[in-house]
Structure formats: C-alpha cells, structure tokens
Amino acid sequence: MQEEKISSYLCRHLEHDYGYLSTLFSSFENITIERYLILQRIERVKELLIYNEQTLSAIAFQAGYSTVQYMTSQFKQYTGMTP
Image 1 (spheres, rainbow, N blue to C red):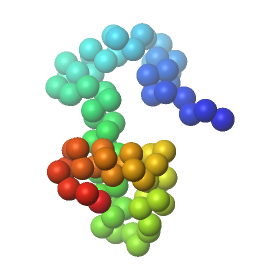
Image 2: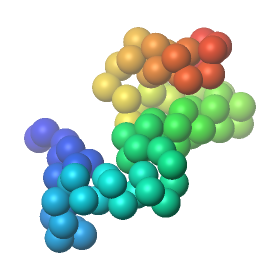
Image 3: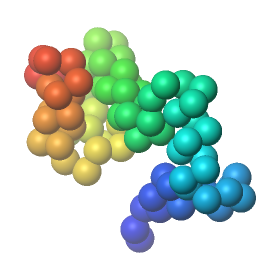
Image 4: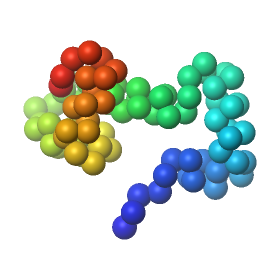
C-alpha cells in the first residue's frame, strides 16, 4: 500500500487546493509546509536518539523515513551533524 502524500491529505481534509493552503501556512509561520514537516521529523529523530536505545533503522522507521540513508542525509542537512 502506497502512503498518501501530505499535500493530498491536506487538500482532502481541509477542502482547499494545496497552493492556497501552502500560501496561508507560509504567511503565518514564515516557513513552507514541507520544511515545517521536515523539521518536525528531525526533532522526532533527536528525541529518539536521546531517549531510546534503538537502532538507526528503527528510529528511521518510527520517524517516517523510508531508509536510514535518507534520514541521515536530511538530519545532516538540517543540523550539520550526523545522527
């Protein structure tokens, strides 16, 4: 089963097109929806790294990443450090 894209999910549940929702969100938060979600996932990874004794693979799965490599790459891009 393929996971639904966040843009489709938001449009369906909020009954507006994604362009409108994205513009509205950005005007209030000064950040795109996509960047906001990435930062939330990175924060989740940080929590899991600090408080749990799990493998990177388990952490990647819990944070919604498809691979450890993708999680590590995004983590480094946003924090400047590797997990």
